[in-house]
Amino acid sequence: MSKFVDRVVVHATAGAGGNGCASVHREKFKPLGGPDGGNGGRGGSVVLVVDQGVHTLLDFHHRPHAMARSGKQGQGGFKAGANAEDLELRVPDGTVVFDARGAIVADLVGAGTRFVAAEGGRGGLGNAALASAARKAPGFALLGEPGESRDLVLELRSMADVGLVGFPSAGKSSLVAALSAARPKIADYPFTTLVPQLGVVTTGEDVFTVADVPGLIPGASEGRGLGLDFLRHIERCSVLVHVVDCATFEPGRDPVSDVQALEDELARYTPALGGELSDRPRLIALNKIDVPDAKDMAELVAADLAERFGWPVVPISTASRHGLRELTFAMAEQVRAHRDAQPVAEPTRIVLRPQAVDDSGFTVEPDPELPDGFIVRGARPERWIRQTAFDNDEAVGYLADRLARLGVEDALAEAGAQPGCPVTIGDVTFDWEPSTPSGVAVMMSGRGTDRRLEQSSRISAAERKAARAERRRTRTDDELFAEDPEDA
Image (tube, rainbow, N blue to C red; front, side, top):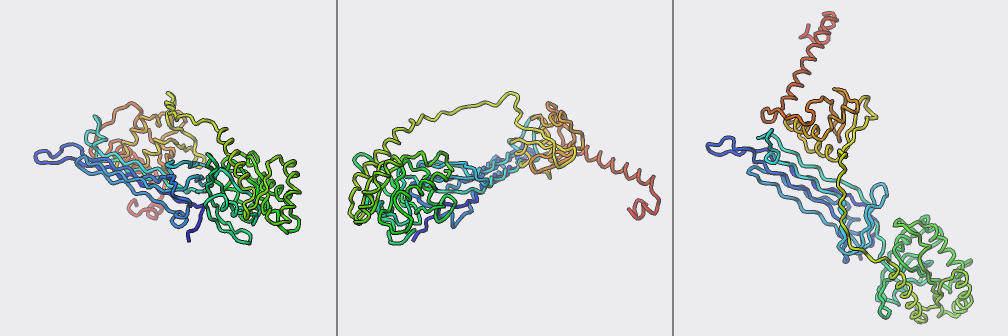
């Protein structure tokens, strides 16, 4: 027997992009035929897709980790790495997606609706794509970008036009079975319905769906019983029907107090999708009038309920089918009125918003944790950091040129940054040394090297040597021997 699951946590991890290739074309009589390294392939994304044939989130309950494949690495001979296929996860219609903070990021309604849960990483450029007039034969390639990783909460909210509201054992399951071809579990004890049951009802030219959801008890809006599980599945219902048990013998209960208790719980509940349940049209179905005492009770309270709440009241019996036709037409009328009141869907228009002329795409902020430090935030600088191989000096120099052309060095200087101050971009922190003002041509050097880094390394070595000489002049021979026997 399959298990119904309507809330799961999914750990979505997209695939990383493939690394670019640093290769030089070689053949007979052409030892240096130019760069021919191909680009890396794009990583696969994790995509949620609405499938009308899926009715539960059970698959994610057993397999909560979803990992897409990574892109292939580029190769020599201008061979680009293969892109990885997206990992498509099938979800039921009406699935709501929350992020780790509890904010709604997607409401998946309608067959074929798609949502990218985790974006695949970009592939790195090969050295053939990085070649330019300044770098005719780059000795490096860009790394593939890591794939996005997100923890998402999926909650299913039933897609039904009419929701049946009532205490346990009020006859909601019997009513769905009598109105449609659905066959929910029916028994003579409370909470026989543990999961929502949907039935399709046809009345004349009107076709609508009815949801039988777990029974409601006082305190359900605070989580008592199956309250939150119950209330979640009526958020999308356009009409609510109070199914009242007129044959109950529980002390302190009567049809008026039952309806009032249900309304109090609905008023306390705040739907995550917005709106209020109190705004939905209502109907009251006084059930079990096939029992003589229940029929007398229904006749006694029908007028009082109609006057107090102002909603149509229909006495019914799911056993004898008395009043079901009247109730069905009343529900169809309410559903039809709700559908007619909905605004006409306008065709989707694509709005292009060009980037502002003065928008550099990054910001420079003081670092609250490092004195005299700065943090550079921006999509492009952070992506360039992730794609740089820091064990290759030429790749680091290329990164410096890109940041300079973007205006990062000028912005740091305007913000008051001094040479040697710590600068953080993404997850990398380095000591800032102004090297390439924007617009200055790059000085060519050997493949895999950069003269500016070599010069900076020589300056650092000279500074260390001068510092050691200064310490030798101010310390005794014994102190020097204790610190470094070679200096003594």
